[in-house]
Length: 234
Image (cartoon, rainbow, N blue to C red; front, side, top):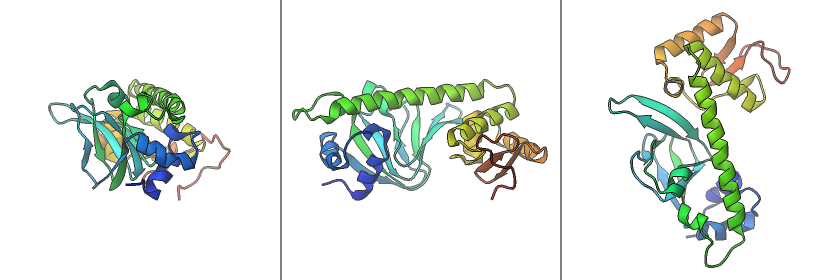
């Protein structure tokens, strides 16, 4: 079955396929044994402690990567939205997953065969060198992001962890106003703090004029990388 238009659009926005012509994508996806699957919100896309030789590309929706211990405590490791890939390191290494991947919303996922990506196919297509280069760059970028999370967690107080995270999100957006991809519980899990303590600290910082926020939209007051003036977050 040829890839859908939704799949092609997702691939066009994916770092893995950077520098590859749109017209080559259908043949490339066939070469990688692409399989499309749909999931409902809260479905497990991949489970921890299982092996997979396929990694995912989010065509639409959002998934979260989470880790649970034997007592049911959950830590959010990261998220993947449209055009993002996940589980590529585990698929390439053929190692059991250390995290579970769960659908945060209804989503469509394109699964790609890591073995086919790493080995030159019988057709010796010209995509593979570029694909491998893109894969290495993408994995390296995710390692940088993981180091960033470790920097947030290294902060001693809940306030310092939250401000470290918000500062990183602001820098990524290039604006004092930005949206974050996590709800309150997920943010608490990501920063390894109590949700009630997180909510209380956010309220205190708003009262002190440090931040403004409404749901998942935040503004850092007094920290305006693009020269924007502070005000109520619309």
